[in-house]
Length: 399
Image (tube, rainbow, N blue to C red; front, side, top):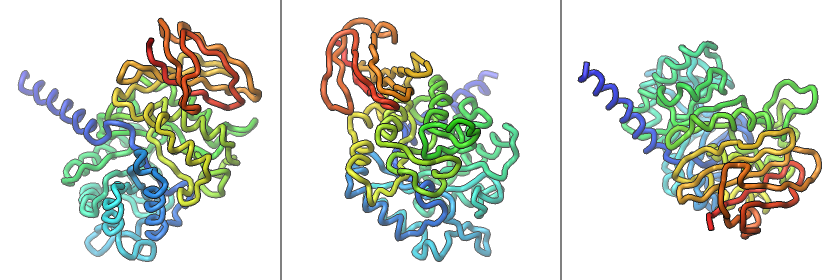
């Protein structure tokens, strides 16, 4: 009995250490789906990698380039999965080598069923073979979807664990992203199934929130209201994933423009960045980084805001105040500081008085605005104007 218990404890602890090694902080990068859908090719992806390097994204921490659905070309006569030769004439390994030379890691996509969401070849019953293939190409990250699969939780757990085990056997460290949209509450089981991150909601659309009468299409506020309640389940190597950043898409037609995705303004895009950083979300950009305007760059490359997301303590913010207009989130940081986000969900600008005692912080603090890059006050309160749909983001240092 003691020997069995020791083995179990060792297995669980080793899985935890493995997860921390793979994703000690939330992954950051760029993913192809919202901009390209399945119309991807190696030329465009190399251009994206070049732009990530030249724009300063790689230096800022965006170190993954993730290929979503549509890269697959079926299987060869030995059942090995292969890339579409028209889209990837040089092969995936050549792309991985190109990225690795720039300090960028490669992510790829598959599905726990015979076919993917877009109808391409997937990995069910070929987990070990596909994991070995991905490893041989130099893949560093796998997004594993759940289209065309049974709806029950037990099947999902088994299928995800099968791929997680296959990745571990592949001989390469590969981050495992579980994508079943939160339908089976993966925050309760995905870490034990071998995931380092798991989607908590349906696919994000390029909109602030659902319009009156809309019953589908996740806006930023619908996603916030789900993910903000799951802070107990996140930490180093185990991240809640509220889906990709929509910053800079501006209503582009395509996946993010479906189901009411009419686009956001720059204030709303900055809130997307602020709230995702507070919630320790993976920061996955989806706009065309080859042609970012200055405001998009300012939002995505704000080092002080990124530092909140990448803080090594790995604590997801807790929503301390939740109202129809005002939301306040508080996140402890590794050096003893706190990050505080104040969101105005209302349709008009308004004055807000933030009393630190009301959010559980005693004493006096130096309060630094991370978008203005300056200390705005010191003490135990802050009062100021917050625009409609704006999130004021502060870093508090005890004085």
